[in-house]
Amino acid sequence: MVYYSDLAEKNDEVIKSLEAASMDSSLTGNEELCMGCVPLYGKNVDYERGVKEALSEQFVSPVEQKLQYMGRIDFDNPKEPVFVFASTYVKLRFKGTTCYAKLRSHINYWSCYMGVFVDGVQKKFRLPENDEVMVCLAKDLEDSEHEVMLFKRQDACNHVDFLGFYIDKKGEILENEPLPERKIEVYGDSVSAGEVSEAVEYVGEQDPKHDGAPSNSWYSYSWMAARKLNAQIHNISQGGLALLDGTGWFCGPDFKGAFSLYDRIEHNVYLGRIKKWDFKNYIPDVVVIALGQNDANPVDFMAEDPEGEMAQYWKDSYKYFVGLLRKQYGAETHFIFTTTILGHDPSWDNAIGEICAELGGKEKNYHHFMYTNNGCGTKGHIRVPEADAMSDELSAFIETNCY
Image (cartoon, rainbow, N blue to C red; front, side, top):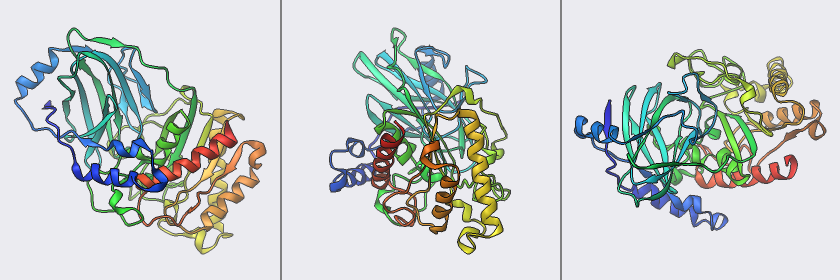
């Protein structure tokens, strides 16, 4: 086990860039963009001292009933739940001065960064590869009520086992506010997961080189939209994901598509654990399907021949995919078919529009939604201000058509 102290510094460049983004006239007053993201930098300190200090505190087991979880989580071992998808979180409210978290990482690619809010202040920290860590999330706080939300910034490029919190020996675990009644679910790719969202100096441009640090699901359009709707979210999004196996970019060279992901928790074959999901655990009011971007790899068959055999197979498969989810969720759940503002050929959106009409459209709770600058808004991933604008449009559409 490795121990990390809470020796923290502000990442001034990220703070300044996020604050600059918030000055955009269209985003004025959006406190989320001003909040920034403070990396929890830590030095390796004396192992025995650090672990002894943490373990002398009160253990808050993952099975503690007052903890609040959100997301598609593997609870097969309830004492070691596995966080797989972006936007997954566990929230603790407590009275005390100190909070540690014990975690274990399983990494396929990128570095593994976790996010945490302590009393509304966001931080991030990097986990070592495939090791257990004790992380000091907060220390020397005022002896009063506090809230800690530990969340997964990235998609299934890694899995993280949550092994519990530690708070003051005399601390008190408090009840959380209930989760929102509204529920949405998103099936998407890296854009929906918030990949490279914090690289705000690259708005409209190709991505910079990175190790996963600027990816943050908190700033994904999908989680932003959920917060604006006061809704829970299961963000079933994965970088490189397409609809069909053998296309896209996920889990190459034998690429896996949404059919190999939609009904699973763990789904990354390179992390060695594949587990089925029980759909009874979460019935959403609204399902957003944001696929059709990575599907153009290795061949953009929709652009080449929208009426061709491969294009028709994709459209039939899309309808079949929707049917699988409809069977799980029932007739009342609304489905939104969309892509994003990332550049792609408009033939994909035309195909999705055809699918929506063939399934019965709004009368059958199917909706085709397109953003103002759909498919032509940026050359790279969606940055914070772009995601904020997308979430405004999406949440307004959902509020009007689905609630």
